[in-house]
Length: 422
Image 1 (cartoon, rainbow, N blue to C red):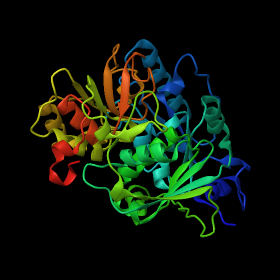
Image 2: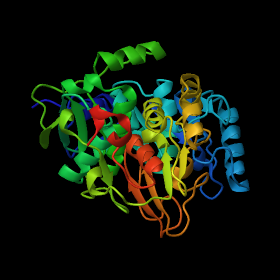
Image 3: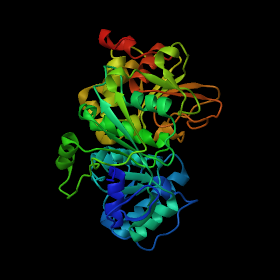
Protein backbone atom coordinates (compact mmCIF):
# COMPACT_ATOMS: atom_id res chain seq x y z
CA UNK A 1 0.00 0.00 0.00
CA UNK A 2 1.35 3.42 -0.99
CA UNK A 3 1.51 6.67 0.95
CA UNK A 4 -0.45 9.91 0.97
CA UNK A 5 1.26 13.31 0.69
CA UNK A 6 1.35 13.84 4.46
CA UNK A 7 2.80 10.37 5.02
CA UNK A 8 5.51 11.00 2.40
CA UNK A 9 6.52 14.31 3.96
CA UNK A 10 6.67 12.76 7.43
CA UNK A 11 8.68 9.82 6.10
CA UNK A 12 11.26 12.14 4.55
CA UNK A 13 11.50 14.27 7.68
CA UNK A 14 11.82 11.23 9.89
CA UNK A 15 14.35 9.39 7.74
CA UNK A 16 11.88 6.56 7.22
CA UNK A 17 10.99 4.51 4.18
CA UNK A 18 7.35 4.13 5.18
CA UNK A 19 4.85 5.94 7.43
CA UNK A 20 1.37 4.62 8.20
CA UNK A 21 -1.50 5.99 10.29
CA UNK A 22 -0.74 5.64 13.98
CA UNK A 23 3.05 5.81 13.61
CA UNK A 24 4.99 8.17 15.86
CA UNK A 25 7.50 10.16 13.82
CA UNK A 26 10.40 12.19 15.22
CA UNK A 27 10.81 14.67 12.40
CA UNK A 28 13.46 17.14 11.29
CA UNK A 29 11.88 20.57 11.02
CA UNK A 30 12.70 22.73 8.01
CA UNK A 31 11.32 26.04 9.30
CA UNK A 32 10.40 27.28 12.78
CA UNK A 33 8.31 30.44 13.02
CA UNK A 34 7.82 32.69 16.04
CA UNK A 35 5.12 35.34 16.11
CA UNK A 36 5.04 38.24 18.53
CA UNK A 37 2.81 36.49 21.09
CA UNK A 38 5.54 33.90 21.63
CA UNK A 39 7.53 36.67 23.31
CA UNK A 40 4.74 37.78 25.63
CA UNK A 41 6.22 38.63 29.06
CA UNK A 42 4.04 36.10 30.88
CA UNK A 43 5.13 33.13 28.75
CA UNK A 44 8.58 33.87 27.32
CA UNK A 45 11.63 32.06 28.67
CA UNK A 46 15.13 32.81 27.46
CA UNK A 47 16.52 30.45 24.83
CA UNK A 48 20.22 29.67 25.06
CA UNK A 49 20.67 28.11 21.61
CA UNK A 50 18.96 27.81 18.20
CA UNK A 51 19.75 24.92 15.88
CA UNK A 52 20.03 27.05 12.72
CA UNK A 53 19.29 30.80 12.59
CA UNK A 54 18.71 30.54 8.84
CA UNK A 55 15.71 28.27 9.50
CA UNK A 56 14.02 30.61 11.98
CA UNK A 57 11.39 33.17 10.95
CA UNK A 58 10.07 35.85 13.33
CA UNK A 59 6.93 37.81 12.42
CA UNK A 60 5.20 40.47 14.49
CA UNK A 61 1.53 40.19 13.56
CA UNK A 62 -1.00 39.75 16.37
CA UNK A 63 -0.57 43.13 18.06
CA UNK A 64 0.91 45.48 15.47
CA UNK A 65 1.66 48.28 16.09
CA UNK A 66 1.86 47.56 19.82
CA UNK A 67 -1.43 48.69 21.47
CA UNK A 68 -0.14 48.57 25.06
CA UNK A 69 3.04 48.32 27.13
CA UNK A 70 3.02 44.53 27.43
CA UNK A 71 2.83 44.17 23.65
CA UNK A 72 5.58 46.75 23.19
CA UNK A 73 7.72 44.69 25.56
CA UNK A 74 7.19 41.48 23.59
CA UNK A 75 8.29 43.27 20.42
CA UNK A 76 11.44 44.49 22.18
CA UNK A 77 12.11 40.94 23.39
CA UNK A 78 11.61 39.53 19.91
CA UNK A 79 13.99 42.02 18.33
CA UNK A 80 16.64 41.21 20.93
CA UNK A 81 16.15 37.48 20.28
CA UNK A 82 16.82 38.01 16.57
CA UNK A 83 19.84 40.22 17.26
CA UNK A 84 21.31 37.73 19.71
CA UNK A 85 21.17 34.76 17.35
CA UNK A 86 21.68 36.54 14.03
CA UNK A 87 18.20 35.77 12.75
CA UNK A 88 17.72 37.81 9.59
CA UNK A 89 14.19 36.75 8.64
CA UNK A 90 12.55 39.22 11.02
CA UNK A 91 9.35 40.90 9.83
CA UNK A 92 9.04 43.84 12.18
CA UNK A 93 6.56 46.72 12.14
CA UNK A 94 7.08 48.51 8.84
CA UNK A 95 7.58 47.85 5.16
CA UNK A 96 7.45 44.03 5.18
CA UNK A 97 5.09 43.42 8.10
CA UNK A 98 2.04 41.21 7.84
CA UNK A 99 0.24 38.22 9.24
CA UNK A 100 2.74 35.41 9.69
CA UNK A 101 1.06 32.90 7.37
CA UNK A 102 0.73 35.50 4.62
CA UNK A 103 4.38 36.43 5.04
CA UNK A 104 5.30 32.75 4.75
CA UNK A 105 3.32 32.53 1.51
CA UNK A 106 4.66 35.69 -0.10
CA UNK A 107 8.29 34.95 0.75
CA UNK A 108 8.30 31.23 -0.11
CA UNK A 109 9.32 30.22 3.40
CA UNK A 110 7.15 27.09 3.19
CA UNK A 111 8.76 24.91 0.53
CA UNK A 112 6.96 21.97 -1.07
CA UNK A 113 7.70 18.69 0.65
CA UNK A 114 8.95 20.31 3.88
CA UNK A 115 7.71 20.89 7.46
CA UNK A 116 7.03 24.25 9.12
CA UNK A 117 5.87 24.71 12.72
CA UNK A 118 4.71 27.70 14.77
CA UNK A 119 2.68 28.17 17.94
CA UNK A 120 -0.16 29.73 15.93
CA UNK A 121 -2.95 27.28 15.16
CA UNK A 122 -3.34 28.38 11.54
CA UNK A 123 0.22 27.46 10.55
CA UNK A 124 -1.32 24.76 8.38
CA UNK A 125 -1.97 27.51 5.82
CA UNK A 126 1.36 26.39 4.37
CA UNK A 127 -0.39 23.26 3.10
CA UNK A 128 -1.45 25.27 0.05
CA UNK A 129 2.20 25.04 -0.97
CA UNK A 130 2.47 21.25 -0.59
CA UNK A 131 4.12 21.85 2.79
CA UNK A 132 3.19 20.14 6.07
CA UNK A 133 2.43 23.07 8.38
CA UNK A 134 1.28 22.57 11.93
CA UNK A 135 0.51 24.75 14.92
CA UNK A 136 2.14 23.35 18.06
CA UNK A 137 2.49 24.60 21.64
CA UNK A 138 5.03 27.22 22.62
CA UNK A 139 7.21 24.68 24.51
CA UNK A 140 7.29 22.50 21.38
CA UNK A 141 8.20 25.50 19.23
CA UNK A 142 11.09 26.28 21.58
CA UNK A 143 12.18 22.64 21.45
CA UNK A 144 12.05 22.68 17.63
CA UNK A 145 14.03 25.93 17.51
CA UNK A 146 16.76 24.56 19.79
CA UNK A 147 17.02 20.99 18.47
CA UNK A 148 15.61 21.18 14.94
CA UNK A 149 13.18 18.37 15.71
CA UNK A 150 9.61 17.76 16.77
CA UNK A 151 7.27 14.77 16.75
CA UNK A 152 3.94 13.88 15.20
CA UNK A 153 1.61 10.92 15.28
CA UNK A 154 0.61 10.18 11.72
CA UNK A 155 -3.12 10.30 11.09
CA UNK A 156 -5.25 8.78 8.37
CA UNK A 157 -6.07 11.03 5.40
CA UNK A 158 -9.34 12.18 3.85
CA UNK A 159 -9.03 13.05 0.15
CA UNK A 160 -11.04 15.78 -1.61
CA UNK A 161 -10.96 15.93 -5.39
CA UNK A 162 -12.12 19.30 -6.70
CA UNK A 163 -13.76 19.42 -10.13
CA UNK A 164 -15.27 22.22 -12.16
CA UNK A 165 -14.88 25.92 -11.39
CA UNK A 166 -16.36 28.37 -8.91
CA UNK A 167 -19.16 30.59 -10.15
CA UNK A 168 -18.86 34.41 -9.87
CA UNK A 169 -19.32 35.59 -6.30
CA UNK A 170 -18.46 32.17 -4.83
CA UNK A 171 -15.16 31.66 -2.99
CA UNK A 172 -13.15 28.90 -1.40
CA UNK A 173 -14.45 30.17 1.96
CA UNK A 174 -17.81 28.90 0.72
CA UNK A 175 -16.19 25.59 -0.24
CA UNK A 176 -14.84 25.29 3.30
CA UNK A 177 -18.24 26.02 4.84
CA UNK A 178 -19.80 23.42 2.52
CA UNK A 179 -17.25 20.84 3.71
CA UNK A 180 -17.79 21.78 7.36
CA UNK A 181 -21.55 21.41 6.98
CA UNK A 182 -21.55 18.28 4.82
CA UNK A 183 -18.66 16.22 6.19
CA UNK A 184 -18.22 17.62 9.70
CA UNK A 185 -15.30 17.20 12.06
CA UNK A 186 -11.94 15.91 10.77
CA UNK A 187 -10.36 15.44 14.20
CA UNK A 188 -7.07 13.39 14.04
CA UNK A 189 -7.30 13.19 10.23
CA UNK A 190 -5.23 14.82 7.51
CA UNK A 191 -6.88 16.40 4.48
CA UNK A 192 -5.49 16.08 0.97
CA UNK A 193 -6.74 18.29 -1.87
CA UNK A 194 -6.34 17.48 -5.53
CA UNK A 195 -8.31 17.08 -8.74
CA UNK A 196 -8.62 19.13 -11.95
CA UNK A 197 -10.50 21.96 -10.24
CA UNK A 198 -7.41 22.96 -8.26
CA UNK A 199 -5.68 24.43 -11.32
CA UNK A 200 -8.39 27.09 -11.61
CA UNK A 201 -7.83 28.31 -8.05
CA UNK A 202 -5.32 31.03 -7.26
CA UNK A 203 -2.72 30.36 -4.58
CA UNK A 204 -4.59 32.81 -2.35
CA UNK A 205 -7.81 30.88 -2.85
CA UNK A 206 -6.08 27.61 -2.02
CA UNK A 207 -4.52 29.14 1.08
CA UNK A 208 -7.95 30.26 2.31
CA UNK A 209 -9.25 26.72 1.99
CA UNK A 210 -6.20 25.25 3.65
CA UNK A 211 -6.09 27.84 6.47
CA UNK A 212 -9.64 26.97 7.40
CA UNK A 213 -8.63 23.31 7.69
CA UNK A 214 -7.67 24.18 11.25
CA UNK A 215 -11.35 24.84 11.92
CA UNK A 216 -12.13 21.32 10.70
CA UNK A 217 -9.70 20.12 13.41
CA UNK A 218 -7.50 18.52 10.75
CA UNK A 219 -3.88 17.71 11.57
CA UNK A 220 -2.37 18.55 8.17
CA UNK A 221 -4.23 19.83 5.09
CA UNK A 222 -2.07 19.66 1.99
CA UNK A 223 -2.63 20.43 -1.67
CA UNK A 224 -1.25 18.21 -4.39
CA UNK A 225 1.30 20.28 -6.34
CA UNK A 226 0.64 21.50 -9.87
CA UNK A 227 2.29 23.76 -12.45
CA UNK A 228 0.68 26.87 -10.93
CA UNK A 229 2.28 26.15 -7.55
CA UNK A 230 5.66 25.22 -8.93
CA UNK A 231 5.84 28.36 -11.08
CA UNK A 232 4.89 30.47 -8.05
CA UNK A 233 7.67 28.94 -5.97
CA UNK A 234 10.35 29.25 -8.65
CA UNK A 235 9.50 32.94 -9.07
CA UNK A 236 10.20 33.53 -5.38
CA UNK A 237 13.06 31.27 -4.36
CA UNK A 238 16.14 29.52 -5.65
CA UNK A 239 16.14 27.11 -2.70
CA UNK A 240 15.93 23.44 -3.69
CA UNK A 241 12.75 21.53 -2.89
CA UNK A 242 11.07 18.28 -3.80
CA UNK A 243 7.26 18.37 -4.13
CA UNK A 244 5.39 15.34 -2.88
CA UNK A 245 2.61 13.55 -4.72
CA UNK A 246 0.38 10.77 -3.40
CA UNK A 247 1.01 7.24 -4.57
CA UNK A 248 -1.58 5.81 -6.94
CA UNK A 249 -2.39 3.15 -4.34
CA UNK A 250 -2.36 5.49 -1.33
CA UNK A 251 -4.76 4.48 1.43
CA UNK A 252 -7.46 7.02 2.41
CA UNK A 253 -9.96 7.00 5.23
CA UNK A 254 -12.46 8.46 2.76
CA UNK A 255 -12.53 10.09 -0.67
CA UNK A 256 -14.97 12.79 -1.73
CA UNK A 257 -15.51 14.72 -4.94
CA UNK A 258 -16.64 18.36 -4.79
CA UNK A 259 -18.13 19.99 -7.87
CA UNK A 260 -17.12 23.63 -7.53
CA UNK A 261 -19.80 24.67 -10.04
CA UNK A 262 -22.47 23.59 -7.53
CA UNK A 263 -21.14 25.47 -4.49
CA UNK A 264 -23.22 28.43 -3.35
CA UNK A 265 -22.43 31.19 -0.83
CA UNK A 266 -22.68 29.95 2.76
CA UNK A 267 -22.75 31.55 6.19
CA UNK A 268 -21.75 29.91 9.47
CA UNK A 269 -24.12 30.73 12.31
CA UNK A 270 -22.70 32.21 15.53
CA UNK A 271 -20.51 30.34 18.03
CA UNK A 272 -19.40 27.32 15.97
CA UNK A 273 -18.66 26.17 12.44
CA UNK A 274 -18.91 22.39 12.25
CA UNK A 275 -22.39 21.37 11.04
CA UNK A 276 -23.49 24.96 11.63
CA UNK A 277 -23.50 26.56 8.16
CA UNK A 278 -26.44 27.54 6.00
CA UNK A 279 -26.87 28.95 2.47
CA UNK A 280 -26.87 32.75 2.53
CA UNK A 281 -30.37 32.73 1.11
CA UNK A 282 -31.68 31.23 4.37
CA UNK A 283 -30.29 34.09 6.46
CA UNK A 284 -31.04 37.09 4.27
CA UNK A 285 -32.29 40.02 6.33
CA UNK A 286 -30.40 39.38 9.57
CA UNK A 287 -29.32 42.84 10.78
CA UNK A 288 -25.62 43.50 11.43
CA UNK A 289 -23.59 46.21 13.13
CA UNK A 290 -20.06 45.24 12.19
CA UNK A 291 -18.46 43.67 9.11
CA UNK A 292 -14.85 42.53 8.96
CA UNK A 293 -12.69 41.37 6.06
CA UNK A 294 -9.18 40.23 6.93
CA UNK A 295 -7.11 37.59 8.77
CA UNK A 296 -4.66 34.99 7.49
CA UNK A 297 -7.59 33.34 5.70
CA UNK A 298 -9.17 36.30 3.92
CA UNK A 299 -6.89 39.33 3.88
CA UNK A 300 -5.56 38.46 0.43
CA UNK A 301 -5.54 40.55 -2.73
CA UNK A 302 -8.30 38.37 -4.20
CA UNK A 303 -10.44 39.15 -1.17
CA UNK A 304 -9.89 42.90 -1.32
CA UNK A 305 -10.60 42.84 -5.06
CA UNK A 306 -14.00 41.15 -4.73
CA UNK A 307 -14.93 43.37 -1.77
CA UNK A 308 -14.10 46.47 -3.81
CA UNK A 309 -16.16 45.16 -6.72
CA UNK A 310 -19.18 44.64 -4.46
CA UNK A 311 -19.05 48.09 -2.82
CA UNK A 312 -18.04 50.12 -5.89
CA UNK A 313 -20.30 53.14 -6.27
CA UNK A 314 -22.19 52.31 -3.07
CA UNK A 315 -22.02 53.28 0.60
CA UNK A 316 -21.88 51.19 3.75
CA UNK A 317 -25.30 51.13 5.41
CA UNK A 318 -25.94 53.57 8.28
CA UNK A 319 -25.16 51.97 11.63
CA UNK A 320 -22.71 49.48 10.10
CA UNK A 321 -18.91 49.53 10.40
CA UNK A 322 -16.91 47.85 7.63
CA UNK A 323 -13.30 47.14 8.59
CA UNK A 324 -10.84 45.81 6.03
CA UNK A 325 -7.41 44.55 7.11
CA UNK A 326 -4.93 43.44 4.41
CA UNK A 327 -2.93 40.33 5.23
CA UNK A 328 0.38 42.08 4.61
CA UNK A 329 1.72 45.51 3.79
CA UNK A 330 2.73 44.10 0.40
CA UNK A 331 -0.92 43.18 -0.21
CA UNK A 332 -1.92 46.66 0.98
CA UNK A 333 0.41 48.27 -1.57
CA UNK A 334 -0.93 46.06 -4.36
CA UNK A 335 -4.52 46.90 -3.42
CA UNK A 336 -3.62 50.58 -3.32
CA UNK A 337 -2.08 50.45 -6.79
CA UNK A 338 -5.08 48.56 -8.17
CA UNK A 339 -7.50 51.16 -6.80
CA UNK A 340 -9.22 48.77 -4.38
CA UNK A 341 -8.34 50.81 -1.31
CA UNK A 342 -9.79 54.01 -2.75
CA UNK A 343 -12.98 52.17 -3.72
CA UNK A 344 -13.34 50.73 -0.22
CA UNK A 345 -12.66 54.09 1.43
CA UNK A 346 -15.15 55.85 -0.84
CA UNK A 347 -17.77 53.31 0.26
CA UNK A 348 -17.12 54.14 3.92
CA UNK A 349 -14.86 51.25 4.88
CA UNK A 350 -11.94 51.67 7.27
CA UNK A 351 -8.78 50.08 5.83
CA UNK A 352 -6.19 49.30 8.50
CA UNK A 353 -2.55 48.33 8.46
CA UNK A 354 -1.67 44.65 8.10
CA UNK A 355 -2.19 42.74 11.36
CA UNK A 356 -4.35 40.01 12.89
CA UNK A 357 -6.32 42.86 14.46
CA UNK A 358 -10.04 42.31 14.89
CA UNK A 359 -9.88 38.58 14.02
CA UNK A 360 -8.73 37.65 17.52
CA UNK A 361 -10.46 40.50 19.34
CA UNK A 362 -7.14 42.00 20.38
CA UNK A 363 -7.42 45.50 18.93
CA UNK A 364 -8.66 47.58 15.98
CA UNK A 365 -12.30 46.56 15.87
CA UNK A 366 -13.33 44.78 19.08
CA UNK A 367 -17.06 43.99 19.32
CA UNK A 368 -19.25 45.54 21.99
CA UNK A 369 -22.14 44.04 23.99
CA UNK A 370 -24.97 42.49 21.96
CA UNK A 371 -23.55 43.55 18.60
CA UNK A 372 -23.91 41.38 15.51
CA UNK A 373 -20.92 40.89 13.25
CA UNK A 374 -20.38 39.14 9.94
CA UNK A 375 -16.73 38.27 9.42
CA UNK A 376 -14.48 36.92 6.70
CA UNK A 377 -11.85 35.69 9.14
CA UNK A 378 -10.96 32.40 10.80
CA UNK A 379 -13.30 31.92 13.78
CA UNK A 380 -16.76 32.83 15.01
CA UNK A 381 -16.53 31.46 18.56
CA UNK A 382 -18.34 33.20 21.40
CA UNK A 383 -16.14 36.01 22.74
CA UNK A 384 -13.57 35.55 19.94
CA UNK A 385 -13.84 39.11 18.63
CA UNK A 386 -14.84 40.95 21.77
CA UNK A 387 -17.77 40.91 24.17
CA UNK A 388 -19.15 37.37 24.69
CA UNK A 389 -22.70 38.60 24.12
CA UNK A 390 -21.82 39.59 20.54
CA UNK A 391 -23.04 37.32 17.73
CA UNK A 392 -20.52 36.42 15.01
CA UNK A 393 -21.53 35.06 11.61
CA UNK A 394 -18.83 33.86 9.20
CA UNK A 395 -18.87 34.16 5.42
CA UNK A 396 -16.76 34.98 2.37
CA UNK A 397 -15.46 38.52 1.70
CA UNK A 398 -18.06 38.97 -1.06
CA UNK A 399 -20.90 38.11 1.30
CA UNK A 400 -19.45 40.30 4.07
CA UNK A 401 -19.10 43.27 1.71
CA UNK A 402 -22.64 42.81 0.37
CA UNK A 403 -24.00 42.61 3.90
CA UNK A 404 -22.17 45.81 4.90
CA UNK A 405 -23.82 47.65 2.02
CA UNK A 406 -27.29 46.26 2.71
CA UNK A 407 -27.05 46.48 6.51
CA UNK A 408 -28.30 42.90 6.73
CA UNK A 409 -26.87 39.53 5.71
CA UNK A 410 -27.14 39.55 1.91
CA UNK A 411 -26.27 37.30 -1.02
CA UNK A 412 -23.29 38.81 -2.90
CA UNK A 413 -25.06 38.28 -6.20
CA UNK A 414 -27.33 41.16 -5.21
CA UNK A 415 -24.49 43.54 -6.08
CA UNK A 416 -22.45 41.50 -8.56
CA UNK A 417 -24.72 41.48 -11.59
CA UNK A 418 -26.87 38.96 -13.35
CA UNK A 419 -24.27 36.19 -13.61
CA UNK A 420 -23.99 35.96 -9.83
CA UNK A 421 -27.55 36.57 -8.71
CA UNK A 422 -29.14 33.97 -6.44
